[in-house]
Amino acid sequence: MDEEKLIPISALQHFVFCPRQCALIHIERLWTENYWTAQGRVLHQRTDEGTPEQRANLRVERSVPVVSNALGIHGVLDVMEIDTIENTFMPVEYKRGKPKLNNCDKVQLCAQALCLEEMRSVNINRAAIWYWQVRKRSWIDLDENLRNETKNVIRQLKEMFAFQLNPAPIYDKRCLSCSLIDDCQPQALQKDFSERYVRNIYRL
Image (cartoon, rainbow, N blue to C red):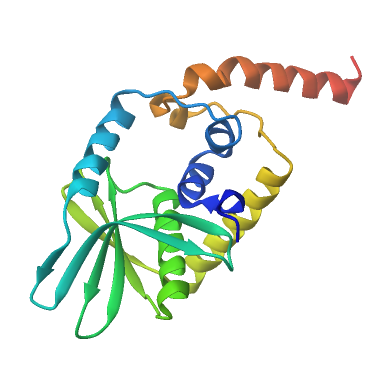
């Protein structure tokens, strides 16, 4: 499949966090950096610059490109750990903050694992996210529910990309940490959408 038609795995994380943020980044090509995104970028640069390592039967590779033509997604793994004896593969994603209440990071990780499964003809039951703020791994079970959620997000993203949709804003606490808050203007636009909705109902 043409890589230009593939959905970047990072878009799945953005979509689950906030569909409007995803559209601004991946459809309108907007990006503004703040303290949090800069810190995350530096963390990933340190990870990406690392060289492959071999520790006994464990091989660690960094910045590993992955793709699933069946699902229409592609991306880059922060770290891939390979047990050379058991021939098992495990993606490890690095994040700046701490475990989130929603599944945005888990969906991103699951998508990476689905790519590896297709590319390597293996089954991956567990993966990990290393959170800088808590300085430890969170182990993620790649169960059927998470796999189904991930595939559903991919379907929704394909529709959003195909029709170039930009969802209406929803102003909540997520906005406070979003670097695109000034581009999005969720408070002003949400008020405008709400007023139009009421006017349409009552034909004012």
